[in-house]
Amino acid sequence: MKIIRNIQKQLIAAAALAALLALTGCQDEIFNEIRKEVELEDSNVSGDIRSIVRYKDYLFLDNGDIYYKPITSSWYGAWVSDSKAPGDYTVKIAADSTYVYALGYTFKADYDDGENQISGKTLYYKDSVTGAWNTVATFSSSTQTHLFCTNAPQDGNRQAYLFVYGTKSGSVRTVYKLNASSMTSIATYSSSWSVTDSTCDFTVVTSASSTKPLSCVYMNSKTYFFPYLASTTNETSTAAATRMYYASGDNLYYTTADNDTSFTSKDMDTGTIRSMAYTQDFILFGTTSGFAQCPISANIPTSSSNTDFANASSTLSTSYYVNAILADKPDQTRSNNNAVYAAITFTGTTSSTSAVYDNVGLWAWYSSRGKWNRE
Figure 1 (tube, rainbow, N blue to C red):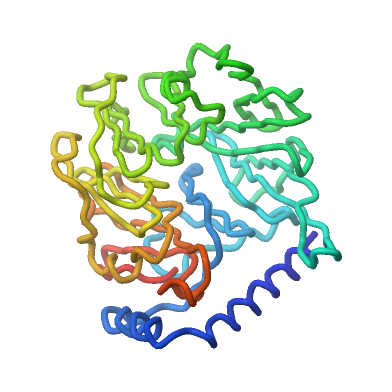
Figure 2 (figure 1 turned 135 degrees about the horizontal axis):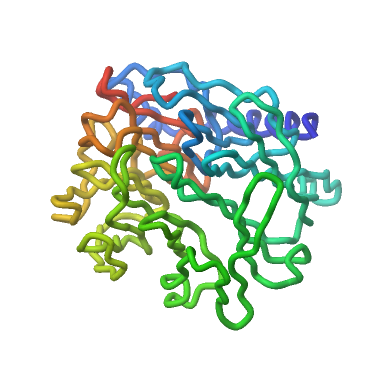
């Protein structure tokens, strides 16, 4: 499987090089403008990243491979490649209080189409940062799978889940709670959701008539599920969550009273929100039109969004999707965090957008340097 993945990466690299040679003058101009603001670092963590998650005192991410670093290592060059990562192409990472999970795809060559096709999917887990990965379950290429977690700042509030729809779940949409090699069904869907775990709340999923939860948060001893990719709470490393936030399209939904479960919405006037992070004075968004943020007061949005965070408007620009974003200290204001991370990618071609392949991957803002730069 390593051979297949290496071939894929070589093909991707070749395509990226060809695209870079064909960059337009407009793209060169934009790239130079970024360099005027900050000298760009070499990209050590590149590729399409779908998740940045907390595990114990570390951060883990996926980019086909798996990388990790101590959450306190707030400087460039601290990420380490997991030498024990499975041979699959890792598409998602999740974690609970004890284990970290990885969802990987294997591929086979389709000589008729000249492309690699997904041949299978495997869920793995391990119980330590440097430990070996173990198989939880395997799935056919046609089975729908989605790995997600609460990603809570407090270790004890981290839960991990897997959505499955295919032969493994008896062709019934099923959400499983993960615990090492164990998968326990907590909810199933036929014509409506049936939730069997009293600590799990599917109210928003049900009200949206959705057949697939995509994210979740932990508050008040319960896990709340959402049919949208972006959700978070105001939990910190020392304070329990009392407010919830999720996004649908470019609308931010939020609770207005402590431990309430009723939501109010506000139009953020952004691209579709795909990720979010909480700080004491801003909710940070990753969108299909780059980075955005919304100021908050007493945990309530005070206005629509803006992009005024150092050099974010040029580096995490509207040319990019920001699929994952994380602030390392939600108990602090945005600028008092040690680090904020954002994973960017783009769709289409370099000839149809101002995006640059060299910028695809992980970016970070460190308080020590005060600018966004490549990781």
